[in-house]
Image 1 (tube, one colour):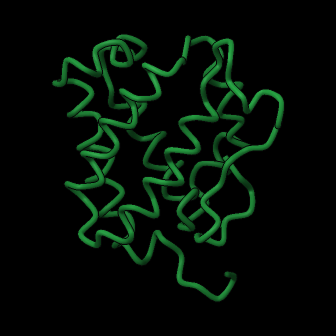
Image 2 (cartoon, rainbow, N blue to C red; image 1 turned 45 degrees about the horizontal axis):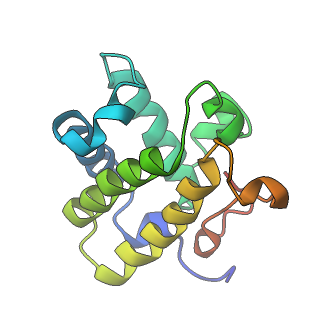
Image 3 (cartoon, helix red, strand yellow; image 1 turned 90 degrees about the vertical axis):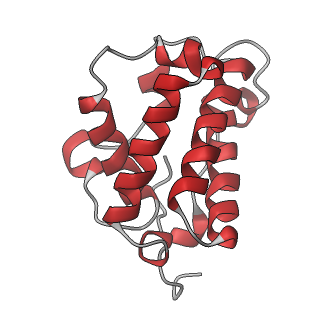
Length: 150
């Protein structure tokens, strides 16, 4: 799908990514269901918001803001200090689904992004029983033209 317009552009670019990330962390801060994943973060969410904004921008086919600063994402490796099981995955997805609903107007785009994020969140589980451990394959948003994976 190399000729397809990147998701980043189709959803409104950096403005939408900013709204998405702000909504995501607002949900994490306020919903009881997200209490465990909120506890994994520092009290000041400012720095992590900027990281997620840069990552999602690049992951959705926008400017290469994340890899220039951080290199290859190596998301599972970077998250190894945190116990991520099914409950943590589900809490993260709960916050992200709501944030997508708040931020991305087109239902088809929302579902495309959410499905890719669902696979990514499942990949991030690092507790016993993750079937992806046998596969050793990262998940990427293929419609963005991004071939670097997470």
